[in-house]
Length: 415
Image 1: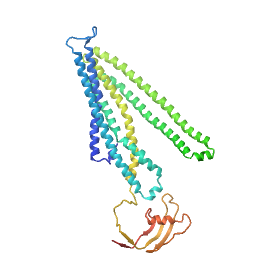
Image 2: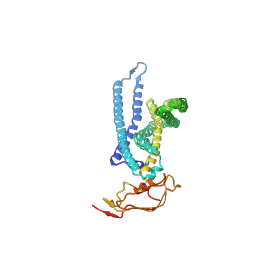
Image 3: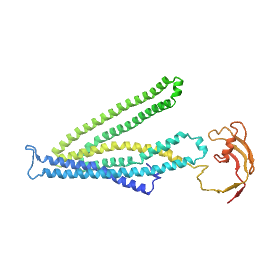
Image 4: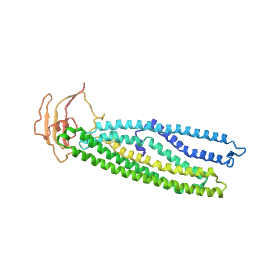
């Protein structure tokens, strides 16, 4: 997200997000650190005399395992605390910001000029107020911290892998792009096809709701069969999308598993070769390098769907913020201008020309001149569409005339 997407965040929100980002980056190092402990623990088992299944003299295997158990508990507890912090801070900051955005959006809609409502579909405003702002909340919420967590795991995994054995790390890294790409493609396709499937079922549900709401009319005109066909057509679309989702996602999953087991074979073959030829490599080094790089690659693939959520939030924010920041020609919330307590005088329309913004080619008023004296009552009479209600709306300043002037009063009395 650009900085502008956080323009409704206050100092508390910024502080919460900074704390959440630090916690997410620290949380991402938990899995690579656990791999180091796991590799060292595995190396301790190698010290056991394999012929008698007893530890070599001078090796306290029980003490060693107790020490590693403490390490695992410490890492688990740290990850638990950091996960809570990163999710809580971003969710609280997102909730505070979206509440502020919702309030300002509703305020902006209520104070738009009437001409704007004539050219804007009212149904879309409700969607903006609910669905789009919820999308913004997801995009500025814990998805950002989760992305940073996975990216931190990727970076720390690569660093640990190259520190412990750069030769094996290079070999495993050569397979990592395939693993990351397959995981990212699988996650993206799954999210996209799931959205299409839900949209198709939503259309079917809307048809069912419309039919059941008007069931008397449907039965009166013997439209049951037509209603069934309309509902079945939407279900057929959902079925096709569901089948496509199953085939695509399971194919991607199979490719991912193929790459995983292929990387297992390559890493253990080359790791065994290095163990035999290079005294620097042992079983712990091979396991640490292999799993660190592999988990880092997986994490990079898992981070991709979170960016998709952020991208969706950017699209939703563009439309919402455009309405909030829209300049209003007639702003009822404006504090400018003189506001008298009492009006005494005449109402006069001078050479008024007007057409509605939704129908600019249809002239409603053509040179209207009208004067209403103080205390007098008049009636506007005419055929439908001649401009009776339009004249009153111009007086209320729901609209401004295209040409001419509306004078509300001549004498202003201050009480």
